[in-house]
Image 1 (tube, rainbow, N blue to C red):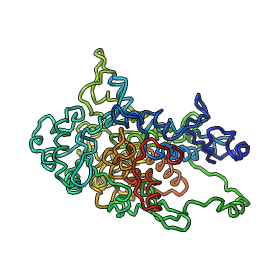
Image 2: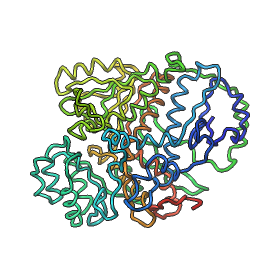
Image 3: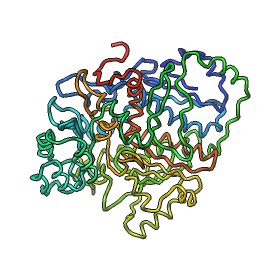
Length: 547
């Protein structure tokens, strides 16, 4: 049973909650949760953006704070509820009363921006504009004007630096010794690169630059509006959009945030009209209720977490995958991270020094272990280092696999198959294995081998075209929003896949495209475009209905 009234006494048929079956789950999604000082207080996307810090890092300097676009707080609250409900269902038979899951939209949304606050604490600066906020209007980046549109560049993560600078017609920067390595590049002065791109890009067309840089394994994105999204070749190749109906008219809508196999996601029906199913539901209620079954429930106790007994082997780096697996760890899973000494996690190496807020001259400290970004999204985990370039390292990896329920990674889609990883092989090694992947664009389609990150996915998925001050052409958010969106979806889908495995014994492949996951949370804009033919744009801090 799902409710969203801030006060339980205001829930229609609130008395029925007291007579739910003992193996039922009540999921409450409210602005501030059912308990605490703000319980029962109303809230919306604007107030949630303000309370979590998003409004602060989104806006231009010396201009009003700026909320997240459309109803992002509601989307994240919904995905968090999906994750929590799927987890609670795993242990539904162990209690003698229904379990209540209280989802606070503010708390769920805070997790999509908190790494920047943690990093600021580690640096002892007390505040943060995130990686892209706090700019003056007109200042170059994170979106740059090309001859025929706008683009984003992840300069800090560029591979093949020399060749990339030549694509951007910046040969004078191709030999900068301090920028050739991406280790520590984020903390170095990139102002010449930013100014150079702002100078040369207006003479270049965006799509040729996009393809040239992406083929060099550089993080790059193109700003697409919602009209572009419904015609996008990558989304088309993966059949992402689905057809639905609004009062008899066919419109396209966002599909799933990931491809699932063999238990594929499917659209069963369009959104219901008011009172459409009154008669059929009354008939359904006359049928006997099926008893709950769950083979995994005995592994968990009330104090341990619903994923107690689940083991996850993670090869994830940076934010999206590490956040998704952190959520699984916080829910009780045993997550073992495979680290690398020759190429440490990019969030371990954002700086080549120990942050001053945690520096202690009396201790032996290493920059790789003391970065706030990394530590904020890897709680409750264990880590081992393996050199997977070495045959013995790969041998150990294959010896580990049968001991785990889930394999999680966010490599380019070609990497794992090159190691011999297939779902059939994993199922042979460990029956019912879940293989969960995050990549920029998914495992097939014309962009399958292209890299990407949060800053490049926002424009590619249409979010940047919806975000910004009213009347502006759109902008990136202040904080790499696609990463936590993908992480939330990944965690929820892993739990759903575990439930599916417990019922069927089947393995599951989760092929999550960050571009598609973000397009899902732009879903109302996609339907609006299909219904009206108008391309939606930024609305600033306005409410869609009232102000």
